[in-house]
Amino acid sequence: MKNLKYLVIVLLVSMMYANANAQKMQIGIEGGVNFSNASINPSVTTDTRTGLIVGSLLDVNFTPQITLTPGIRFTMKGFSNTYTNVNGVSQTDTYKLNYLEFPVLLKVKFPLTEIKPYLAAGPVLGINLSANLDQTAGTQSASSDVSNNVESIDFGLLFAGGMDFKVGMNTALFFQFGYQLGLSNIAKNTGTTTIKNNALQITGGVKFGI
Image 1: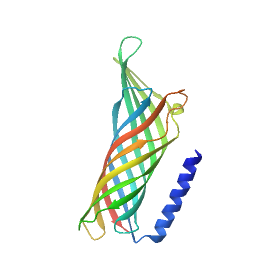
Image 2 (image 1 turned 60 degrees about the vertical axis):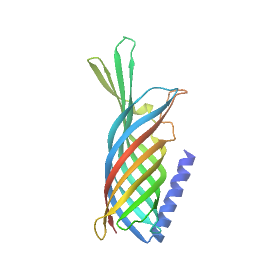
Image 3 (image 1 turned 180 degrees about the vertical axis):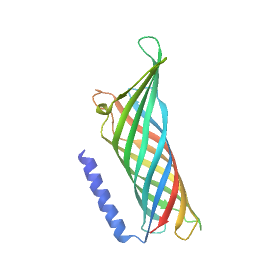
Image 4 (image 1 turned 120 degrees about the vertical axis):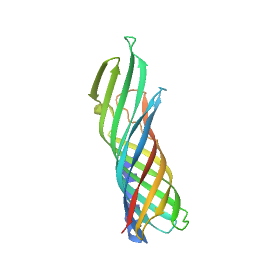
């Protein structure tokens, strides 16, 4: 937890420095799809949960090539696991986890007139908003709140690539493909079991110069 506090302080200082020294800024909105899964140890076979990503971002340009992009977004995560229960019936457990996330990405752009490809990477701090378990066995189904079994803070790294398309004097569209690697164990009260979120993400949106 101390490391997270230090990271947040560093990110806030970086954002204030960027704001004071930026050449130009853009504010934007984004939306997309999140193909979430989990890395579990001891190993368990899991399936992907598909969810939504909705949020906003701020591009702070140090130079035409270097940009710092903090953001805030709502992200649906989770995973499912299918197995044969003690009654010999096939059962599927689906964990539905929703987060408020704060990514801070460092982008390297490659300006090509109206199209600007870029690579990006940076930390993501997530706050768990809800955690539910849906269980289906044959014709029987049940849902329960499992928030007490999920850590309130999730931390990871996002690696991404994308393109900006200029469509007006102060307007640009963008498309981004990314992979989010979970670094923290989100499982509580599970002994030696560790669960880490990971996801493939496809997002897009629009940005306006300010």
